[in-house]
Image (tube, rainbow, N blue to C red):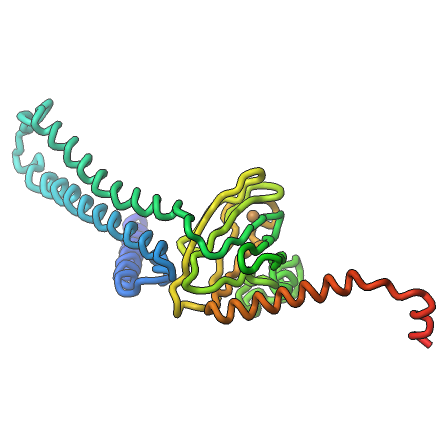
Length: 301
Ligand SMILES: [Cu+2]
C-alpha cells in the first residue's frame, strides 16, 4: 500500500513537471527575444540570421520528431502482441527502404547546410569595416585599443567596484542589492550604431573569449593569435549591451564581464573627441617639468 502511495506521489510530481515544461514551451512561443527560453533575437543583422537559422533547424527537428514518434507510437499500439500481430519481414534488408532512409536525411542535411554556410561566410567577412578595435584579454580584464578615426583611445575595462566589493567573501553586501551584479564594468567599450565594427582579438596570458549575445558575436582570444570578429548594430538600437568571457580562464573567469555602450555616430564622435582631449591633457601633464623642492616648499608655506 505504502509503495503505491509513493508511486502516486511520484506520478503527481511527473505530471507537475510535464505541465511546467508544456507551459514554458507555450510561453517561449509567444516572445521572440531574451525571454529565457530561446536565443535572443539581438540587434545586429548577424544575430537575426543566427536566430533564423536556429529556428529553421528547430522546426525541422520538431517535424522529424513528430513523424518518427508518430509512426513508432502508431506501430506500437496497432501492432501489439496482444492483438495477435505477426512480424512483417518483407522490409528486412530491403534495398528500396535503405535507399529511401539514406536519401531523405541527406536532403535534410543539405537543406540545413546551405543557409548555415551562407551565415558562416558572412560572419567571417570582415572587409569594409569602418572602425577597428584591438581587444586584448588579460586575467581578468579587457583592454580596448581603438584604431582608425579613434586612434589613440586606449583603456582597460574591469569589473565595476560595487560588484567587486560585493563578491568578496564575507563582504556583508547582498549581491541582489547590486545593480547588474557581475555584469558591469568601470569603462565600457563605446561604439557607434550603424557602423561595421571589427574587433581584432588576442590575449596576453590564457585563452579567453569575447561574447555579447545580442550582437550574435563570440570569438576566442588566444595568446599569439589575432582573431577577427565583426558586428553592425542597427541604427535606433543604441544602448548598453552586456556579455561575458566565455572561455574558462582561471580563478576570476566570472569576474571579467563585457559591456558595450552603443551610441549614435554623432555621440560616438563627441566621445572620441573627449577621450582624445583627455589623452592630450595627460600627455601635457607628463611632459611638464616636475616642480622643484623650492617651489613645493613655497607652495606649502
Ligand atoms: Cu577570461
